Image 1 (cartoon, rainbow, N blue to C red):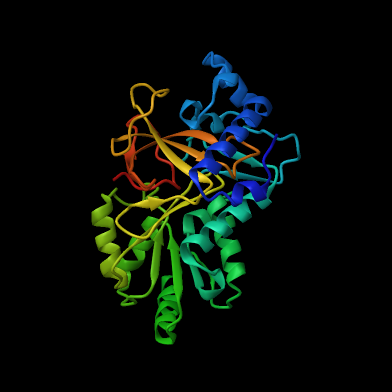
Image 2 (cartoon, helix red, strand yellow):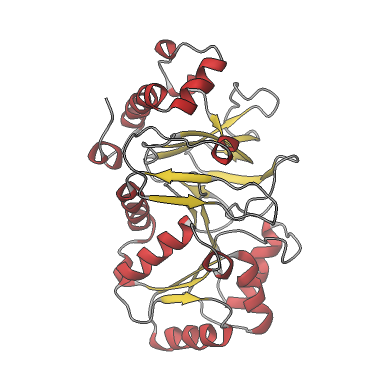
Length: 327
């Protein structure tokens, strides 16, 4: 049976997560044709899956060539990944966008509190310049939910953004600046802001516009440019309906309905223990009408309390715009 929103978004312990994850797996293994064919190709008996460590994860590349759906309902919105010219991009067909809204709204509340307490400034030029960005969808909703006339998007109008940031600082208003990495760097090349209480949240993405930087160098540059002590980060992607957040040092936490598991880079069906580097597998139970079990092409480590960090990407993986920088 398919779990409902109340069940998924009220998860608050490992026992509940494991039980609902197995329920979602059984549902998707039966109702998602692409996932069912993948499991069949692995010669896995779904009846033998009794814990989440046994669940097979669908390679994220399947979203580039297939409609990954567990629902027969009409598609309400299609989110697409960014990419350079000629690159095959992913498409995420969403039949019930209310799952996405509830996921990112509840996650933001969990990590940052009431959105109405913030002015939300979004510096996302490359995403605004194309259609189908799930990040723009989320940012637009957060801007609207903030119910603040000072909240809004910025393209390349850095003068206006600098003016607004100075206004926010003078008024001592809690402010969130969410931005694609290259644009944040372009901004601090031109302006020096001293706004210690500003939350700067980078979403990753150089898109070939600047040289890649290790996280420490990137965050040091942004800290100095904005006059803050830490840089926050968001970890999400087109193929998911949930995000993880870092409040500093590149250490991420997931909302209760999302989990990161690491796999052996040489044997994708084998998992590695916490603290060891491996390929990132993601369980996103909000992604119930698509596939909740995705093997990404990111490399990372998971720690004892479920925190994780991203170390980079597989060498043969194409760079995706809404992923974090290679670290």
